[in-house]
Image (tube, rainbow, N blue to C red; front, side, top):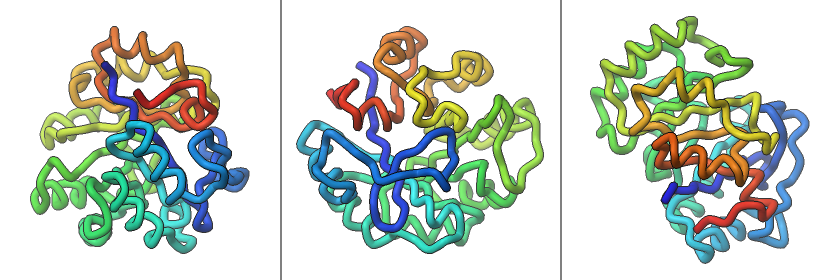
Length: 228
């Protein structure tokens, strides 16, 4: 059975929701797992409903506009947190590792592949997740200018334990996953965690594709999909 990991985006100390990565338009999250947008309440109820871990993105940190690390640390005591705080380099990765279970290194914020290699040389692979951020079918990054083919060569060399394939254009749309993107990264299928637009119909298709883990936000919080 496919492993469904709940997604929580944090901004100004509350859980928020939005579409296609347009963070200025995000609003407080309405979730079937809580009566408010309090991330601690939501995390507690996710655990009660069978969640084994939770993906948390600190949008304020990613945008260099404050942080929500107090909430993140508290959540990590409830459920193991897979955390995206906008890692730029080895130093920021090391800092976040004190707060959470696994730290994501995302192409959106990573400063260089040299820094990525330093992270892999310093810390165990089991605590590192690479996130390949895609927008409009191109690599989304503030600092990296590489093709998907060049990126795949780097992935072969580093051999990460887990790779998030995140289609930012699909986030919050509930319209299904990007099939072409999975084909593009088919050789890494055993490591892939699919994210962006996952709906109820997606799960069976992804399972047939051999995908073992997905990140689900909108479809989970509105009650269309259950955790188990």
